[in-house]
Every structure is written in structure tokens, then in C-alpha cells.
Length: 132
Ligand code: HEM
Image (cartoon, rainbow, N blue to C red; front, side, top):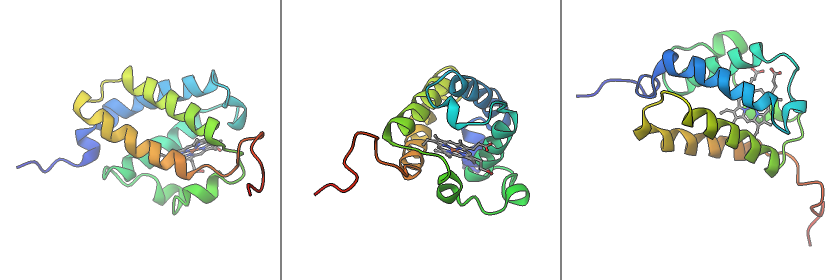
């Protein structure tokens, strides 16, 4: 019987702490860096707390930040398909360089991809505002 939580199966704190440090280093060098605060350590802590809770690990996010309301929290930032793709590329590279067990990587990334798609709140600048 396997009674590990998904958080434990993904590697828990030992995998996510360095993974998210690497992820935000990649974000800071990416074309979407300008959307983020210049200093990313608190953003990294929020993401760590969120991932922990999301995958059934310790409840670290909601006691601190309340209900995630992720889409609402992202509305102030202009996120189009390209921004979501860039976010995902940074995450995929961070996962590739992490110690996350290889058999769980695809499932993790697919869930992140679905969530990133849900954060899109702008059409691309060159797309028609009201397609006929
Ligand atoms: C689609 C591309 C995305 C972009 C461009 C983006 C951008 C941002 C930005 C600019 C912030 C504010 C940082 C701060 O104030 O510290 C933020 C916060 C956050 N993002 Fe994203 N994000 C994206 C996708 C995601 C995804 C897929 C997740 C979850 C899997 C996520 C989870 C979070 C969390 C938990 C916070 C902190 C919310 C809070 O407590 O204030 N983001 N994001």
C-alpha cells in the first residue's frame, strides 16, 4: 500500500525548495521578468507554500495568504499565451534540472500547464480585440 501524499511522491521540500529557486532565477532572466517584483524571494516563498498545499503536503499557503483565488490574483498582470508559454518553459527547465522523480514529471508539468492556461487574461497584442 502506498499512503504517500502527491507532495511526498514529487519529492517534497527537498525537491521543491531548490526547484523553485532555480525556476525564479530563470523567470528573472526571461522576457516576463518585468511582470514580477525585482526581488523574487517572497514570490518564491508564496509559490513554495502554494505548491505544498496544492499537492497535499503541509498547509502552508492559506493560513498565510488566505484562499488562493489564483486567477483573480493574476488579473493585475497582463498574461497572454506567450507569457504563459514562457512561464511553462521556465518551469519545464527547472524540473528537468531538479531531483523530481522522473516518473512524476509529466503529470506535474501537465497540471502546471493547465493552471498556466487558466491565468491567461489578455489576448496577444496583435490579435483582434473582437474577432468576428
Ligand atoms: C501563466 C503565467 C504566469 C505568470 C506570468 C505569473 C505571474 C505572477 C506574478 C507577476 C505574481 C506576483 C508576484 C508577487 O507579487 O510576489 C504571481 C504570483 C503568484 N503566482 Fe503566478 N504567474 C503565472 C502562472 C502561475 C501558475 C501556473 C501558478 C500556480 C501553479 C501561479 C502561482 C502563483 C502564486 C501562488 C502567486 C502568489 C499569490 C499571492 O499569494 O499573492 N502562477 N504570479
